[in-house]
Image 1 (cartoon, helix red, strand yellow):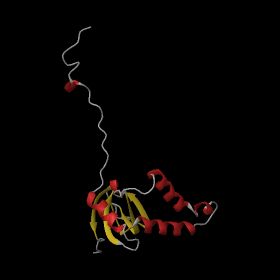
Image 2 (cartoon, rainbow, N blue to C red; image 1 turned 30 degrees about the vertical axis):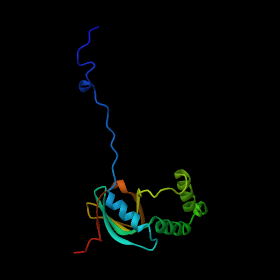
Image 3 (tube, rainbow, N blue to C red; image 1 turned 90 degrees about the vertical axis):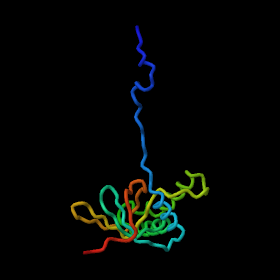
Image 4 (cartoon, rainbow, N blue to C red; image 1 turned 120 degrees about the vertical axis):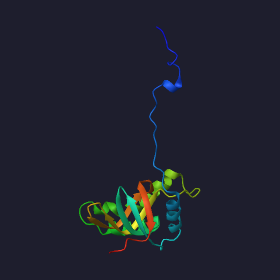
Length: 148
């Protein structure tokens, strides 16, 4: 069996797939962290997520968790009682997974209150609370859109 000079040449080898992960906007991460310092703070913001606009009030994780827990307590139906401690259980599981309090990391999630999503066709969806990954936000601006 003969070998050619390209058999061992790294420039002529099949390329391995390159895996890239989206990187969140550093300024937006720092803004989310700043809002996280005050559970009463809220800041109007507009985001671009998945090609659609989403606007509402940027709130802290703590404020979102409090409002989320309150909304879960208002749920009816079979199994609703299972949700009573769910927000606290989630926070405990996250803390356990991270090994307890450590150095403050930049946030990976963004939380909005009174969020409105606007799709390309002009349809809207209103949500009392919204949570999303910062890596899914492709653009943002302070303030909410003005109505014409």
